[in-house]
Image 1: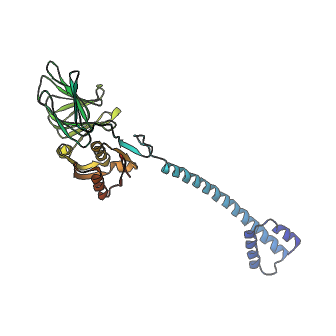
Image 2 (image 1 turned 90 degrees about the vertical axis):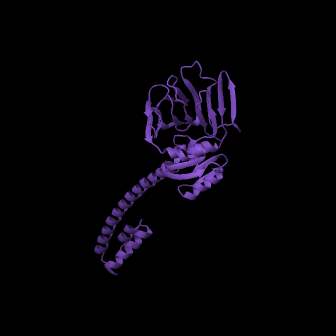
Image 3 (image 1 turned 90 degrees about the horizontal axis):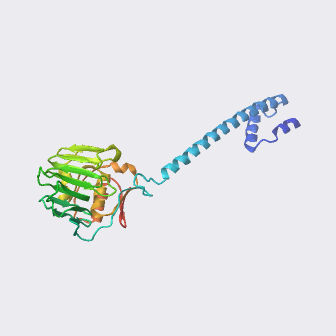
Length: 319
């Protein structure tokens, strides 16, 4: 090999030299200077092409890595959802409730409130009956005499059996949703922070948002859920499942897990937090007594294998 050849080899790394030596062996043990120069030229061209390929691969790899990091950040960032919980979506929040059923009167009104895991029947002055759900309260006048309508206020859940009186419409005001009837049977659910709804068992009711912007009329077997700016969503519902709570049962037939857990949260007065958005719409068939403890209900849910349910303090987490 000539000095010019040695000069041409300067600056090559170990891998390049290995390739070059292999090339030299393929050319023969004693290549001529001209053969060596041609081999070096071909080798240099191949090396430059390989260098350009490596730079393209590196650039693509860099973009892929950046995209992977961005995707990882999106996947691992806390999902806050509508509830604003730092580590998931809180679909129900525990409230300050009394330890026992309370009844207070003053200013011409009566208020009855219930603690967790308790159902209380209240008979109104006109004979209408209210079955008050857990963690709920109803406020009504001590007398409906001399009034143009029978107006009550509800916070939470209640089942109404209204005595017919065409001269005095019966209205229920519940967290901005107003239900107007003459005489019928219906449920109103208005827990703070949860979806507000009206379920009709018999008769006919008119439901509005209290401002006259959105209104609907229900027929028996229909449930109206208030969706905010979009007004009311009306759908058929199972009245047997809907009435389960009045008989001391959790009864769900193809119900969304989000609604099931809101009901459980309101009954036991515990926070409900979903870790995964996709589990909200999981459909559930579930029937179990409300006399069981929260721990027993959660154990039964875990046995179903539809999600993982964990209790920590006053919070049930669904993941």
